[in-house]
Image (cartoon, rainbow, N blue to C red; front, side):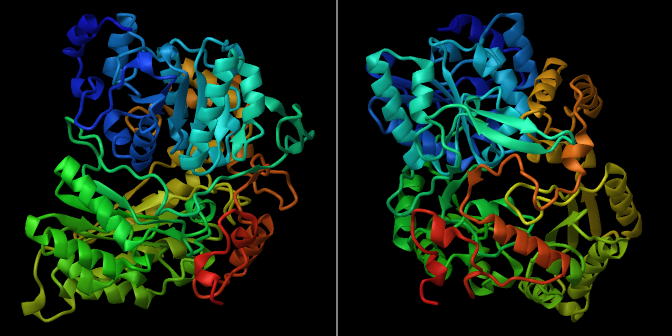
Length: 619
């Protein structure tokens, strides 16, 4: 255990000491002498970001609901705290017990974003745990990882002992049970990993080897251990109504990114946007019933005192019982001044009578994501959204009193021309015209349109996993040209940093050869790379050069359909043939309908436990 008096004294020197003290309402403290397994849920970003992550709250309370397990939290300390810790030999610790990480059985990282990888290394180092898996001994914690980035785990193959692929609510308890059994027999690290590798959804990277062709592409993957599977199939929860969901959440002492009750209304998406990894890997769609959600809302509100409920999913407007659920929540909580937000609505799924009533409690701006400025590009990416379907709901919103609109776009999409890029300006201007081309007496509020463009990053398990990313010069040229052309004061335009998106693409589509560059970049000082003011592109380029990594090979090279991809050994349910078909349709500017309309034969209704997709059962 660390020296608490020294810690308290040093915390007075950092910017936000509440990030590091724990003891919040609804946090869990157990007697460590009465538990068999100690689990550190590690979020590789600052406290405010990590405490806004729904998955943290689910798994934290799920593990703590088991008598023999104590789950604690650990976040990446900001630079001021890291300096204090290193100067005073204070190791990274669990917030609840203040015990250093070396005293835990598991350190479980959630990997939400590729640019958090150096924070993973930094947190292990601050916890006095070897960076590389091969250097850890039996008396050290097992380092495991899950989350969306695990759908290509290879860049971290040297670091992580074991990856969990898919949804963890059933998988983690099974893994903990195996660990408890092995611990009773006298724990042996290798023996545990071999037995864990037999479980569905577990990937142990040391049991595999990649062999390369002369041109740098993958020739084959060899399985080195008889316990390891050739194909790792993701785990899914079949029935969300019966799966664990917390009846309370931890209340932070300081403001966090999302400080509200979060209700996860369903998982998966049926839309089929070709750029969207989440829309592919989280299939099939599984919904919670309105009754379940109303009960969860009641428990969470009574245990936290929050005054806002957020209904979250990949596309909240697609929830089949949205009207029923929102009206039930409004009827129950409107008089208590509890607001309800729908953060991920699509323009063509908006029910304005509901939204108008939601806004009676708390008025907010509207966020739309057309993604592309021209119909041609929206068809390429399978957005299935016409200009009429964009401008119609916008006009309705203006007539109902809204005057602040956010528009999200992407630049660098496959097959994009400068005309397509300028379509972003044209669409934003058409939105502006919808506001002012009304009778003067109906125009209320001060119009503000915030248009932003992110740089397209090709992701694994999408139809665009084979395409080349734009060069940084191309991104800058498109973004700055657009910025120069938008001259209306009512329309503000911003764009994401292309250098960050380039690095994200390198790691999103990289293989295990990137591990050495990742470690070298961290050794040279990289951390918090997703924070623009911390990101140092030049150091990254030095690290790649020192480790002989050709970044263009990973980010900007078009992949052949026949090529073995670094993540091909993972089965997400969506077939590779379906992704190829969607890629070819994108090249032909052809769309695919929402699979609620007709089954698109993506594969999930045949290959995954859970049965056929509910949306196609009656076809």
